[in-house]
Image (cartoon, rainbow, N blue to C red; front, side):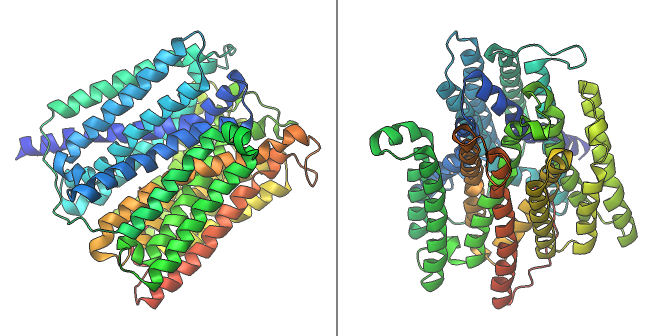
Length: 545
């Protein structure tokens, strides 16, 4: 029995490493984007194609898996096993990491090859995530599955905190010792290291004695939902070929990116209307709370990513400090660390503490997490004096936690209102106040995924698994919304006088205002839909993902 328990603990310890990698690499994009912009002489829109390549891989990876299962009527991932799915995902990510290391050694590296490598790395992540989350639940007692997911989520958040700092150190050196000029070859060591780690983890998975986790859930046909997803997948590549579209049709990149975003959202809203009138053939999408949830996940992931991906360009503006790429890592790490603060705090709800202890922990845990953020920045060599006022922002998140009392709809509404307010403050001010207002978006985003997810799958019954897969596909928002904001930033090139007294880069954060304002409407509308179905939508706890 003890040996069996040891195998489970070893298996889970191995599994959470992949959770760390997802956070580490994704959060590093905030440092890598401004570096690529400078090195490859890109405009802001083009630099955001890193996010487009990275997050679209999640959509296409999930879509291919869904198509395979749909036409074969066999759950492919269930057939090969979650363990093997993770190993295959790791191997795909190894190919991408090795590719990026090879590209960094080339005399004439191209941005297109960098994008392709990022797409392949994330394609592996897509398969890993699809397999790892149910696998984590299965590695132990079912009643403690949520605890393991939250612990894995905490490790993921640690990766998001450390990623920007480590990548900044590799690219620019220790700021105490004086930074060096970054070149594309600077990243070779990082991605060779990551490729080696991916290889080591895949070998450990291969050698480990892990339970074969399967599911007996039947594949549900949903031809109308499939058509919508295929139509979305067909139009997205236009984002990557804006130059060719401009040459052929004369459309500007701004027109193209806004057109693709509008097209995608219109398709989803059409699905919402049609599926409610005639649910046959829509599968999980016959439930309006699921389609609303898909749109909300799309918006949420997009705004979470775009705030930090365009922050490098914002911080370069004189009114925001005129920072160089080598000096922004503490702000990027604070943004992703803010998500860690919220997720660690959200994890308190899965433990059986009494009400008073939970209240005290809700105050203490965020401050301890903030202390960790300061510590790792000091170790890296960053000055943290300008971050010491940030606990004032954390205080608003603590109030939201205490007010919501673990009710997902109440929590989602509270953080959406706070995030919208913070973005408006950032729009109306400059300097440190505006910077911290925008960064605090990370605090309020931190608990949105589980709240949106919980509301979206409530009442789906046998369609819960399919609905979850559709929600994960909507990570595509992280590929579409950042280029939209980047396209607005680029108006600074043709109109340097700005708009309404601010630069277009500053004004571009209007995108975040609209996204968070939409999430306010989403919460109210989804609550109405669930209430109409007679469902208690405030019973699920707000745990991390």
